[in-house]
Image (cartoon, rainbow over all chains, first blue to last red; front, side, top):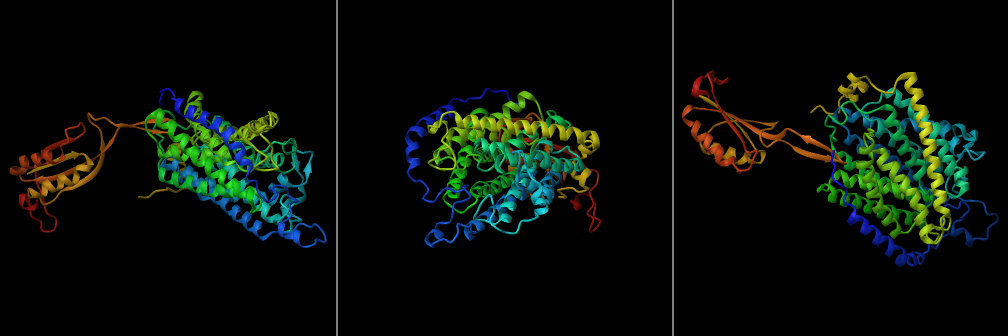
Length: 468
Length: 112
């Protein structure tokens, strides 16, 4: 472990300067290019073309461009899990656990795709019950027929459903980095199913499905709370409950294939355009705006991580650049459709620095073995992004959003964001802890020491990743 | 007959091979090995976790030569592989009792 002091000064000064000039100088500039089209997220927005025709009834009509973009985005988000996350995580573990780690992402894609169709979607997006959970009207997708979605009027209900399915898939897949290299495959399967049902589906309902956080006015464009805080905080709980890897802190646990990890980070970045820009649920100006903020924040975060690491350790690492990019993607997620480009740059750059500290300092200080830094990047990055949304949001960017603290909105939005963060943390901590304890009692979470030393590829799957 | 084992820095392999073939050495065996001597290892840093890598990569060259060539071989290797910095490697010389060419069954120096 390195014990050199962080040299914050340079990045901190740069951040401060950006913050000050950014708000005074660019705030007004951002107001100028207001999207001509009514910003989406308002499901009732009728396509402009229809206005020309004297309408008999304002019946929502499916738009082929919107549908094409959302379906494309669904495929992009699928790519984030497999092979994006599979490679990102697969490269970070030791070679004896490469396959098992890749398998986690692969099998979650399968398990949650089935769970979502059977009952996950209806729990999250079924008719609201007391702002807590969705009703069972869409059990097995009953009653869905390709008509306009009640969540996005210009796309079919199936398009919205499958787009959301891919979010439900990647969220538990993110957690797998915390218990990688030591969890029993059977226990992992049960955990995935229970966690998706008990933690993810209700939280998605709270934030997007008409639940209490949505009513409160908390902003989460593409899943900062639902996806990143929930997975990151659950990962922390999982790392603590399952315990450290055997030999942690004594043996070398260096990544076995960083080119995999960089390839995975690249695919995550690519797929994230579907995740964030796709969350406009239409092919419109808002989607383009979210695309731009996503790319900008990611680039800035990679640089932020790289510079602080370089200043502190003397070496700018490839893993640092890749990790910083993912931290930026995480942090911009809740803000993507609510902030302007310069705000996203500041938000991202800060995310790179904050997550670097999370991964290198906070983890070392507390000594938990979050094997692949899910909490450091998704938990901390997600929390920063959710709060930063309350700082940087601007109605000039999206009418359906709000004005944040830095754009004249006062503390109201920040407070809402903090409530949403707190609720997500609470549900993730309690839900994950209970699920893991029950599984541990019923079937055991960990493989035996012997199996752990042999590696999960061999002991759980009877295969080896490399026969070279 | 003597066996000469040289542990050298990997980037010096081509120079050493050239120097040896210039001397008239007909064959050699090389392998990629890891080890440490006075150079010790190096450290690698992954997201703040520092690992000390004790064993540094080296190349081992093995060749068997007639007794009268040993001094020249050793000198050629020293000249070609030397950088003057710690970690240049070692040369070990040992006696070989017998050499046999499998194809023909020849024995002794003729088989080298």
